[in-house]
Image (cartoon, rainbow, N blue to C red; front, side):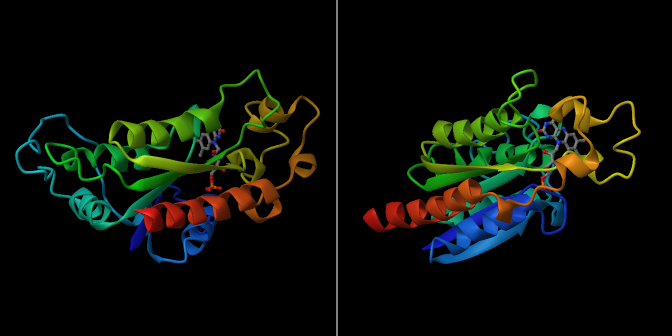
Length: 217
Ligand SMILES: Cc1cc2nc3c(=O)[nH]c(=O)nc-3n(C[C@H](O)[C@H](O)[C@H](O)COP(=O)(O)O)c2cc1C
């Protein structure tokens, strides 16, 4: 049994990556971690050139990654939410799994899960629910392919303004937008996955659910 984990976060050893690694480790199975930044994956061009062959016509790393997804017994997709929707790398990866759909439904029946890092606090109703949008993009892909969605992880990440060096001076700072007019770099601080017990527990649970579902098959 092999579980494939794919992270769209471009930041080195990011919150998203660490959560995905914990979920993979928690399966107790053979796993592979993929960082999409290390690959070139163009979005689907909707040409339907994959319908008869189950292989994309775009000769980039999307071919290899689709093969890895096809060969895996389970799939965890992890991303983040720039401008309140799933990041472009993760979305392009999902689109490039379309060749696996035709006639055979190669992903159908496989357990899957979603991991999303977003920067909108749960109690902020004035901003788009970025985490929901990110989780749903992955979850609905899995539903549409007939996969068995067994869990999700939400992580409170960092708006880039926390680290950019201008966070307390910039008129466009996302810190006050997200956390209120009095918020500062120091008062908000840097959010780490390991300091979020609910997210840690959800990652462990996701891994265990994947293993349980596979063992029950
Ligand atoms: C260009 C850009 C725009 C962003 N916009 C949003 C946003 O609209 N909503 C949100 O929740 N997070 C937003 N973020 C913050 C990311 O979700 C955050 O950087 C995330 O913590 C990155 O995950 P990581 O720590 O795993 O790398 C944005 C980040 C970038 C780089």
